Length: 501
Figure 1 (cartoon, rainbow, N blue to C red):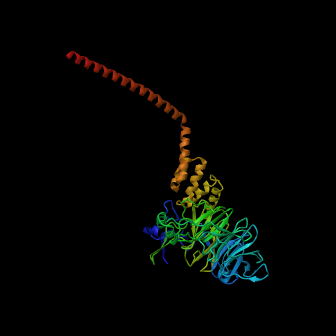
Figure 2 (spheres, one colour):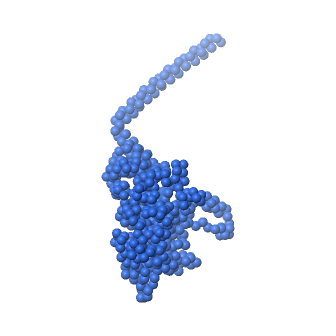
Figure 3 (cartoon, rainbow, N blue to C red):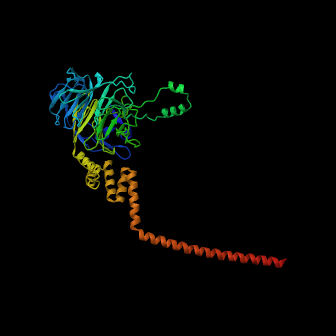
């Protein structure tokens, strides 16, 4: 399938961009105008690992991958109905979970598991056991301590099946489950397994049809409203948890709002109201079928440094953003070679590495950080910690290597703003197209100008004021003189007119 950017068709396809010698794809980023431009790679593929490489036989449709607090990886080998744990070097299998002991002593197995999560707070493993319609919670020895199944609550539609796809747990032990056929958010359960409702539902996309229907409903009877089909939001596809926040994503191609969300404890989206774009700025175009393919964010990972990694099913790419959702790197593609994918399914990170599961190739590809990526991440870490001036030199180094790297211009502008170099901050903010930073820098520049020239400004104001007073008196004097002359002339005309009579 030949995929190209619709936004760069005039200049050729993405294949016209500068290619990386180490990757089977062209490395690019976006400039301040939203145009795809050549860039340097932040990651390169180091190796692709299969089940055979690890000595446990072929993987079959791996659906999820998770790294726990001990840097142990859990691979959900869905087609083989097992969870495979691998060491941090990704070269040795530690344990295979394919049989579990229930609280009553009976044995149970998995059926097409879809997701896994390990809690650092209680050392329990949470498994989304899809075709068994349950979530298993077990210890490291595969002893099940709790089983969550379809709730009997009236809040949960009893006509719906219970199909867990992803699962996470917060610090308090509350369990959140993405269900494949539910669009009202993640199902939320208390630590004791009690159903608590739904969490983090996506908003309905405000299309012209929906707005029109809303207006029509104002004038429609209740009976007709009941017969009309309701507009429903798209469901959550996957999520990750970081501190007190849960990040969610949706793979819907029609949803542009809530593609990626950052939810607080109350379920409110921190990103709401921000004009954010995740994935490619323009849809990918298939020249063979004359079809456009929008991004489908199928998984999300929050790295140790706070970076937001989004996995796009459409293009097989990882889009990495900083904490403020500024794009850092684009990695991967659809390809047969190392670094390319057939059908991506899950994403994880550890330190400076990325791990991407391919459910078609039945592999996990390990990407390692490049020297360019290291500098960017160093500068980003300093910036996120509030060390703007310390981040200045790394950002300058980034610009030396890639003069079009927009995130570096933002970093330099912020550093100069913090250092009081408002004129320089305005320059770099303009190059980065960041009006917020530019306006703050302009305010600072204006204040500095007023302070520096305060005496001169006061003198000028006083001189102008005195000048205006003098000018006013002079004009008043001229006006009074003119009025006196006009009165004299009027009296003279009246006098002459009286003599004539």
